[in-house]
Image 1 (cartoon, rainbow, N blue to C red):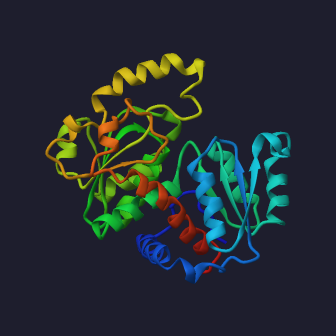
Image 2 (tube, rainbow, N blue to C red):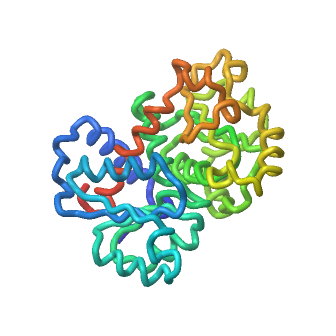
Length: 305
């Protein structure tokens, strides 16, 4: 049984093959309308969500299956041991998606579950987002191989998943990250990426974006802290430090790069409204591709593709 906590252990060929399957599934929805008839996915949410919940619930409907939403705070997950709750849930569901605050808890679920577990986001990885990102590049540019993706923002879980995916698929990744979330750092992942020749780091954002095929940004403050008064001082510090790295028309002048953002967007911080609405922005296609990419991942984990 294979889980999706991250893409360590996945080969480049596996990822590329699944990207092509996702492209096919997107344009041939009717062929997969009943493939999960009688199958149930349990969706466990400790973190807030819009795209993850909507895309997984809608995706299970598209595939003919059923999704059960479980809010961490209104279930016994809030008080019982994870190992016991996940074993119970495994007896009623064919696959589990968990969107948790801590990777260690998600890993415990994977260790004790008797069905596949998908990481819907934790502080270290966001594998479903990374896959949807590459799917969007594949759709818009015809291939991911040899393309240059520049990530501008805070070093976080999304960047980690791009670091995990890009070198394996022949995609050049440049990280422009003046601020680092220490909890997101994965030394093993970084070392492997740096040895690959497909991953570089710089703080020269203007030089980095000039020859980029894709420029990608993300929130400077994690969603669970953005409105938290206890995080206000750190938020103010980050905004001051990161404002020179905002994606705007001045920074991107002269480039033809696709503009990506995994959402939710904090307009006027990491990106301005003009850039969100620009002709090069593929932000909403990227967000809609969450469902199509995840559908391919679900079928792969269930051994159906």
